[in-house]
Amino acid sequence: MEEAEMSEYVIRFLVGGIVVSAFSMLGDVLKPKSFAGLFGAAPSVALATLGIAIYEHGVEYASIQAESMMAGAVALALYSVLVCQLLVRARMRALPATTMSVVIWFATAIGLWALVGGQA
Image (cartoon, rainbow, N blue to C red; front, side):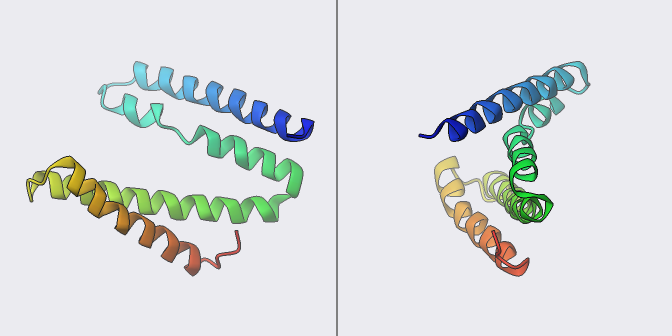
């Protein structure tokens, strides 16, 4: 592994850790406590990756990466809603509900990625 590659991973690790810690502290302060999970799961690695992408490759490249990340986030939201519906309304067990729903997650992410140009 090259030294430049290694330093990029160190930067991602440090920035990601700092942002996750900051969001976790914010979630701990806010009420209701159910927000703590939302803030603890902040996309800190994505933010670090976009910062590095802008620095190394420019805004155009980073915008393509950001579009891909947004497609993945929308797909994850759809997956989460579907899993919740299967667990609560259909009274499915967790493993079958999540296994079935992951197909929707991937199909949505790939479909949205293709829709926005699939340039990443």
